[in-house]
Amino acid sequence: MNLTAWSQTIKQLKAAILASRYKAAVLANKELLTLYFNVGKLISEREKKAKWGDKILEQLSNDLQFELPGLKGFSATNIKRMRLFYQQWSSCFVISPLPTDQLQKNRKKTAASGTFLISPLSTDQLKKNNKKNTAKAELAGGQPATDPISPLLTDQFASAFFSVSFTHHVELLTKTKTLEERQFYIGKIATEFWTVATLQHHLKNKLFRKKGKMPNNFSTAITNENLRATALQSFKDEYLLDFINIQDPGEEDERLIENEIVRNIKKFLMSLGADFAFISNQYRLVVDDIEYFADLLFFNRKLQCLVAFDLKKGKFKPEYAGKMNFYLSALDEYIKQPHEMPAIGIILCKEKSNKTVEFSFRDMHKPMGVSTYKTSSQLPKQFKNALPTAETLKKLMG
Figure 1 (cartoon, one colour):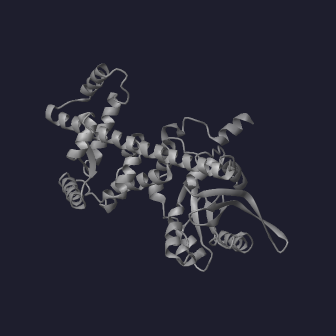
Figure 2 (cartoon, helix red, strand yellow):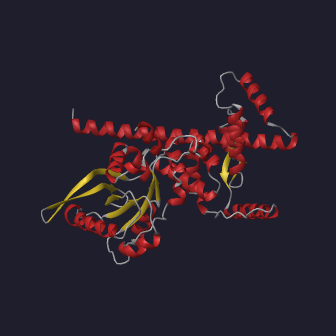
Figure 3 (cartoon, one colour):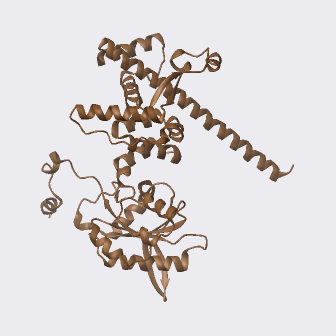
């Protein structure tokens, strides 16, 4: 037996099985979303005509359980979510009958999911709906809608939409407000295979608002337009390091922050986003027989470059830019592989002034930016005076 051929056969079969499973899962998910969309439509229409209340949904759920013993996913809470799912997406998608040939194939399926499909509205229909929503908002005295109607809604977005689980959709519908924001996250979930926990993390960290807003010198330091755009979208203006819990601000220093990041490296990588690989902390660089150490070093697969992070506990200072420029020069000279792009540096500070950053970077030719970080969330206002401060505790224990 040729072992190489055998191994290759196993690999091919494995790939075929996994691809088939993925396609089956996507089709099953699309069928489920179609069902939920249709249920949401039915509930919305009945509520308008018969003026149903939430108590009716409780009864509806109980009756369904009686008719279909063991039925899962149709609690009153979940039915409300289906209603929300339909109401929020009905301006972008429409339920339409299947073609006759498909109806014949699906004749054994139920009318709820087998005789209808969700299809994207045309661009013209989307624009009309957007104008109607804007007019309604203005008449109600509210702000007009500003969501751009993207052509992605009619092609690749629809594919991404149907690959996202209902649980993901509910999380987005309850924690986002604009179509643009939902498009962004759905694209990320579909292409980067985010779990619900990953989505929750990025929603909490407000990834959508922070992408591409970090002060930097990429416009002059990165000449390739596509690479520059990718770099801008790869870093955030602020990182939420809620896994770092420093009770006493007086004890906070760069090494403590670094150690906590390394100890929670998976969570930090989640904060950074996809395509980052951790190389080392205190990465050793030798220049003229003198050792220097970069706080954190990563590699970004999409950018194909090294990314150095320099941690600072306080406010950004102009001299930090010179130090980072030095690190990047050393990385490009001694560490960068011939096929890789020049290294990028991120100075991670507690605070920053964008004008100070701008002046500091003005004549620097190495690509770098400045982001801020927040550690564990602050106590809610109602609890701030209920607990003693760290200083008070020291006095009590002293």
